[in-house]
Length: 283
Image (cartoon, rainbow, N blue to C red; front, top):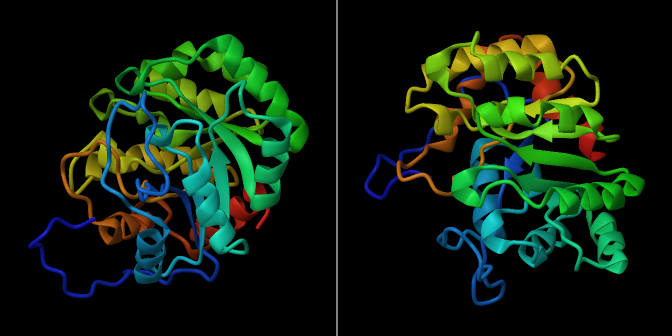
């Protein structure tokens, strides 16, 4: 979101947003009085409930969204599910689960629009999960037709490559693997990410540009271009609103307006924003 005091004059997309365009990675936080944050959380965000998210999407001209459970809520998925129930035609979800999540809860989440589960492997957010739990969760999600979302960073892509290949389900890698842009597109982690995309079960989000570099974000664009070329039918895009753990304000319209820089044709943008998320999330 824009910082207080920034120019709040209306801004518009510099390209035609295709109908049914999807923000395939965003979050809802709280409100804490209804949906408390997890005691074990590594950060405490400001409340950003479903009403704030819906207002952002109206401003951006996006008609669909995938709401991803964030680590600050842990495996208490109620805030995410509340958002899904508010507009089941427009929203899908990605949950966080553990061994305490019941089979009844899994079925209820599927009915609500959950289509995947997510695990974080980033040290600053708690580091790698218990891998036995990870595999048990994958085994429970697979019969539901769900996919696995993995948040990795840089060398973590290389470290987890064989685990990713061995999973018998679709895998989505968040935020372009959060590779180090200083290493360029020939860096080993990014080359491994491109190699993984040779497997037609593996997807990647062309998001998190604001986590790789600062505005105007040009350093991150070659990575997004290379990923789109490598797997045009398995790339997704998202705002990552409300950008947890970033100290620099982010203008989501600026992020949206980067899309033509790596998805230059209307056909590219139709796949990225509409067709691909519809395929994976069942819109």
